Length: 450
Image 1 (cartoon, rainbow, N blue to C red):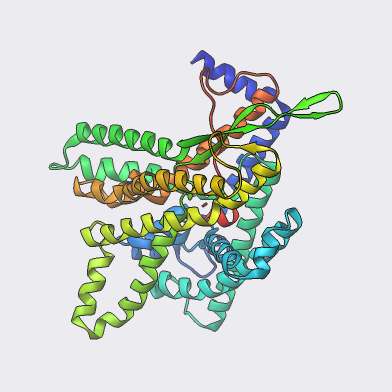
Image 2 (image 1 turned 180 degrees about the vertical axis):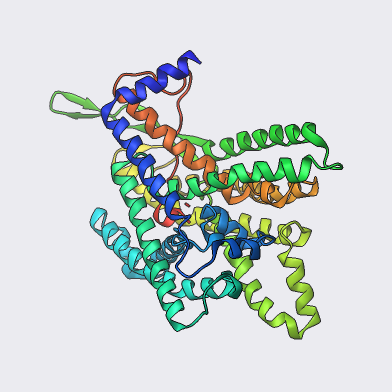
């Protein structure tokens, strides 16, 4: 306890770090306040009553990411999700379109242009999503008479809300601590966590046949174990030794030291889960609209709408494994790594520079990606296993999947940044032994943090 108090004192003794933390908390407070401001003309009480039983499937997951604003029809109802969608589209364009490939290679100037395109695309995506959101999520009994004026006004407010949330994320990145977009997603998930705990304890475990407090404590212990396993997945790396040749420049000697290339076991992060969810839910939406005229179609929709069912999780897990390989191949360019290593006079002991080095890195990545992808798939379908043991749907979502991976990843990234500030000012880090390893942030293409 004394060490914790001293660490907090050290954190607030650094003026720059203190200001950044307070700025971050202030921006996040603004976001949370906005998530409770309901759209004009919408009755919040009637809307809550209309949605009292609907927190399942993809809509429930989006509501968790939005911190409940999605279900409340708030001005931040769509939150940062359109930005994430736009970021995914831009990343796919960077793979397929030569113009965007060229921008990715132009460094900082190219990245600024990509960010500008992403902002514009975010507005376009929000403009398409907002009318559908209004039609599907705002019940007629919970709003004023729905007409063209109501649609236009609400759509403009939702676009402005999403743009404002995107601006908040950028301000947190510039003036705060950590990655802003990732923190906004994380705070939305954390905001739903107390409700999930309360619902599980009061409405599930304290019932006459719910198992009582002992079963709830067992669930908490198991949740802690899952979190620890997820941290291992996020932090796990395979180090490849690299030897640099000695160079004499003037009277100074450079190189000659052995360094390491850290290859992540889960280099793709949370992206495979997001891609797999998109593939699962988009066709399902089309099939749902056709299910009324076909009994077979209705059965297919029912099978793949059950997030706790075998076939849903089996297909979901296979797609995560496939997308992990695909996304890892996209972001890990072994040929470029081999060329840069050769240019800087580095080589892997026992491996020829150039093509052989690239092949060696590909082989290592293939070996570590398989267990990483399987582990990622297990984490993703863990909520289904939790529901098999009687855990409520709302609480089960925190046993794995996108929510848990984002929580763990963003927390580790933020703690790593705080620790770097402490070590820079010659203070002890957050832990006496070991160091918190960084991870790829969830912003931009990688968000898909968030």
